[in-house]
Length: 72
Image 1: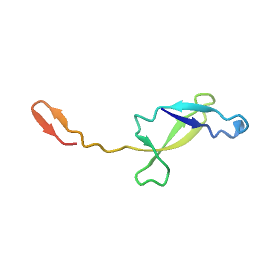
Image 2 (image 1 turned 45 degrees about the vertical axis):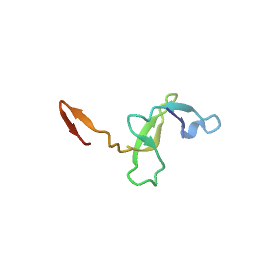
Image 3 (image 1 turned 180 degrees about the horizontal axis):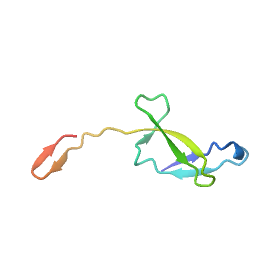
């Protein structure tokens, strides 16, 4: 879980801060990271669209299927 501050211009004086689960998308990164993808995180209080950049971290965990061992 990460905390995101909503960028809705109507709430500049009292910004909304909400929890967002980045796990299904990867890790939160800055826009200049190679391979970063832009997705939208909707504010849970005002439903405003907040852009977030994420990147999947590759893993080399083996996948075991039956009696075979496949590399991902």
